[in-house]
Image (cartoon, rainbow, N blue to C red; front, top):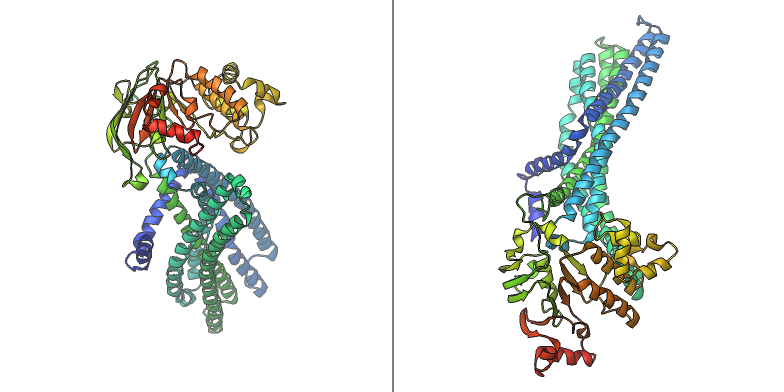
Length: 606
């Protein structure tokens, strides 16, 4: 439906101007990032004017050479050649600084754009990020910003140079012969109509090609992130075919756009060179009747060639500007999304309630929740749950029962549709989001490590921690022994997503990270379920130490690991079906918990 709307939008003759004006407005809002570099930009623009002006003096000087040859000039050939050489030096110097200064502006401005877009991405709400693929978002930082940078560094300067060439060239040829100028201008309306016709299709196809490139980048991103799965299922050829198909779509759209660009350039070439032939024919007639000299005709023809070159280059410039407009629209889609936190002020917001409790109490009161992507499927239904300060509770139940959702609502990844979550007597919404999450640590089942060193991964729990604190955290997590066994110890590179470490080692790094964070609330997403017996023992010892004097929520998959908690809550169909300690719950042979234990012992449930 959306696609049909877009097609109709493009096909409407009344909407084209509106689209272009809005697109230009979007592009200008992105190019406002050049404001801090306006002084450099003005200097570059001055260099552009000087270099363009000197190049436009060449046809005039060549005309003087012809006058010298005819014997009608008051200058010598040596004087004219000396001036020509001087113009060449001036043009070279100012061209160098034009390129350097515009590059300085574009590199600086686009670095600011990349920083702001990344900052916006990383602070967007989780539902927005989950609805979009990683490759699509990274494409915004690569392909789209590169499009803008290309326009700012060279295309914009080329556009101004060509406009200046057209304007100044027109002034010169008008001063040379107004009759011949009017003859040449007769071709302009045709060129303007052609530019309008071709430009519509070029912009649409260029944007489509950029979108298809984002799809191709997404395939690469996902494949490399899950390369072990790809190889385990020997699906290398499947992924190659997927990528080839995506690139074929990019190629198809790019070639369609190239056809229109080539058609426009070919049309302009025929029109311009045909115009030059006509100018030579009509100019020769003016020379014959004495209204024009041969030198003036020669000068006029050279200026016409300059103007023609500028007009011919307008097709590519126009297409590049249109691609930049499309890129700016996609970037603005991200920039206009509301952030969930402001990373520059979140620690110091005066209106936010700080978090001072040593041990936290948590209450879920009639909480109802459905995920935004499937509003018609309730995950939690009027859930009521109370956790006392320092209490350790476990959440158990079948997959999809809502265990992880309970934790996600506490972290405010999502907001409940009804009911409220109370933390230390106040709704969680009253706490600054940044401060709230700093008080909560999660040790997940599948540990996600970054591709740096062990030291950097532990320090991620509290980046301002000293080395001694990090070593102590590793020791408390039972990780120090295996870290010291590596040749590089804490400087050991863990590899992408921690692939160079075993499962148990990754878990203990994650625990060390949580120890370093020193949270008031600890969430354990069955951190030992996928470990061997020896690793499980070491990890469980570290977890037992970490849970001391903290409010703890354990999301349990292996029921044998939760017998030490204060209370077990059995979740079924988004509600608490049973609550109590292990022995009490097992007394009800027909209960949900007893059934889960039985299934797990039989190996049916894991």
